[in-house]
Image (cartoon, rainbow, N blue to C red; front, side):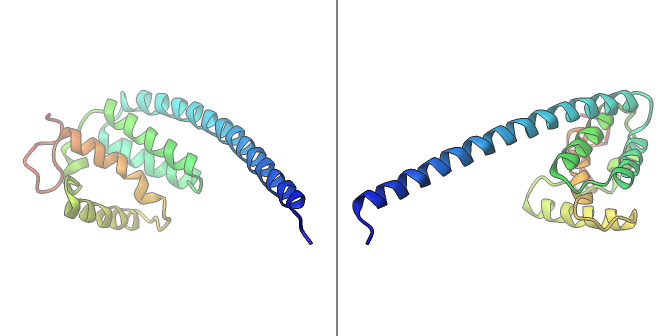
Amino acid sequence: MTGPKNKLWLVVVMIALVVVGTWTGYRWLKGAFAGLVVDSRETYEQGRALGRTITADACLDTAFARHARLGSASFGRQVTEGVFLESCLRTSTPTAAVCESVPAADNISGMVRFSAWTIEECHRRGFNDRSCPRLLQSLNRYCGTRGAGAGGEKTPGVK
C-alpha cells in the first residue's frame, strides 16, 4: 500500500527532477545561445566586408557557394547563413537583377508565392535540402526594403 508519506516523497522527487532538468536545460541553452551570438557576429562582419567589394548578385552566388560547402543541418548554421547573406546584401552594390524575379511577400498570397519561388530557386541551383529556402528569406527582406519584387512598383535599389 502506498500511504500519504510515500505519495509525498514521490511528489518531492518529481519536483526535484523538474527543477534539476530546468536548471540543466537553462545552462545548456545559455551556452548554445552565447555561441550562436558570437558566430553570428563574426559571420555578419564577414558578410559586410565582402559586400563592400561585390554586387548584390555576387552576394547571392557567394551565399549559395557557402551553403554548398558548409551545409546547414543545424539551426545555428541556418541563422548564420541568413546573417551572412543579409549583411552582404546591405553593403553590396545594388543590382536590379537580384530582386527581379523575387515575388513580393507583402500579403498571404505573396508569402505563398515567395515560398514556392524559394523552393524552385533552390532546385534551379541544384539544392534539394530543406534549409536552402530559409537562406532566401534574407533576400526577401533585402528586396522588400529596396523595392517590391517581381510585379512590384518600386525599382530595386531605390527606397
